[in-house]
Image (cartoon, rainbow, N blue to C red; front, side, top):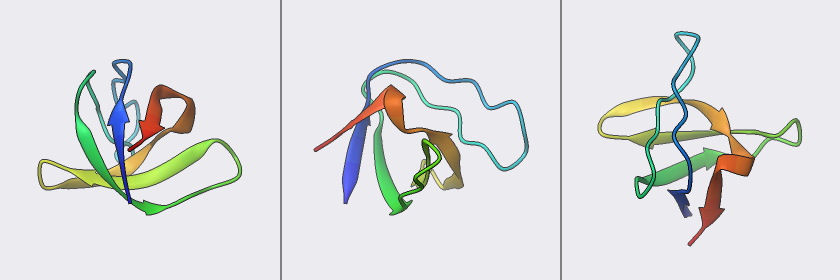
Length: 55
């Protein structure tokens, strides 16, 4: 599954993923804590689920 970033998120930790509006992220894992794990541009990390929409 994939999602599209709606807002910018700047990674604060090494295991987080920086995203920008319009980025298409491949989702690896859905988390009920509000964070998903995905890959974009060869990087893998967590990002806030409320910053993206499923496509």
